[in-house]
Length: 85
Image 1 (tube, rainbow, N blue to C red):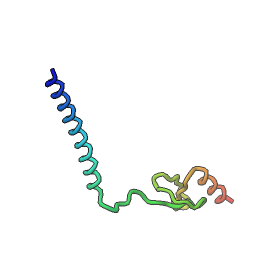
Image 2: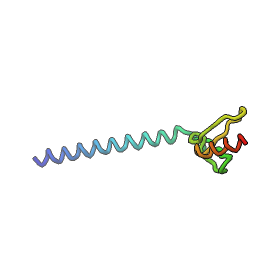
Image 3: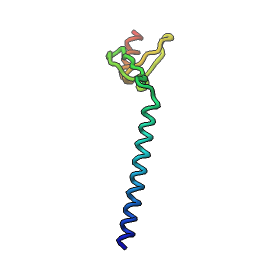
Image 4: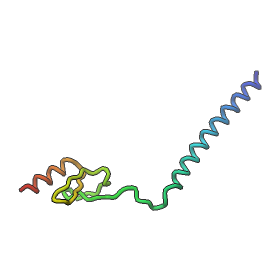
């Protein structure tokens, strides 16, 4: 009976180690697949509050062929109000 318990514990330890190693190897491969210094996103400046935000999170609007980026809808609306005056 003890032998079965020991074998079961060894098997469970082996499976846990195998899963852990597979996950770590996958993470390491993902790190190595991207070149060092690769730019993930571009920072753009909000013309209203003058903060820099990632382009993918910015609220954008095109005015007279120029694309502007804002940190929020509130800043965009404020800019459009001042632009109309």
